[in-house]
Image (cartoon, rainbow, N blue to C red; front, side, top):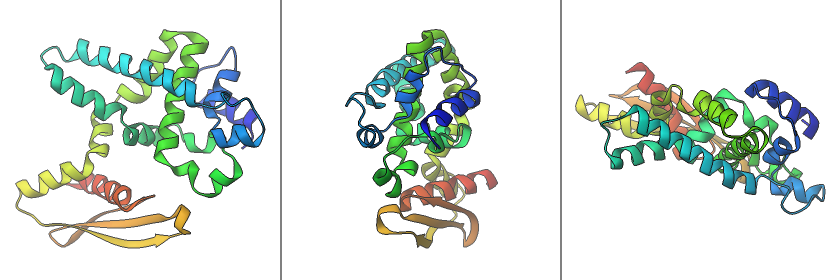
Length: 227
């Protein structure tokens, strides 16, 4: 997908029309892409990701402060960390926005699996928040965060903590838990792992990921939906 299509199509997906589309273009541009087409060294998502991260933390902090009035500071900090961490943001970006297909990468980075790398996907997600804030101010940025991060947050947190939560459920019922690596496909620089999780010897879920841990996490999430 070229840069013009990425910018136009993603605006339709997120439901926000930019007055200055340059902000969104920069938010989607990885440094490898900027270098490849010889843009200014700052014309990639890194600076907007820095800004978007701050806006995201503030918005989530305010939401937790206002909606969980009896929650102590330590618990709010843990809950916020679960919502704004790399795995959560990458999960949201992939499942609700299909964001990886809009990211602009250099050929080398794309060929080595950059489009599916959680660190890049989560950074671009935050850069999009920064882009919305720069273009329209706090109100549309907050609307975006509420729609994609805060809505159904229990489900998002359950996904990120799926292995821990599954372990707790299995232990509480005195059941056995085992993960098995089914396959690993693709070249070493762009490998996809497939894992299956068994509870008391019975298969409860299959998951894929760029790492063994990621594949197990997806499998655990599938198991949680069945238990």
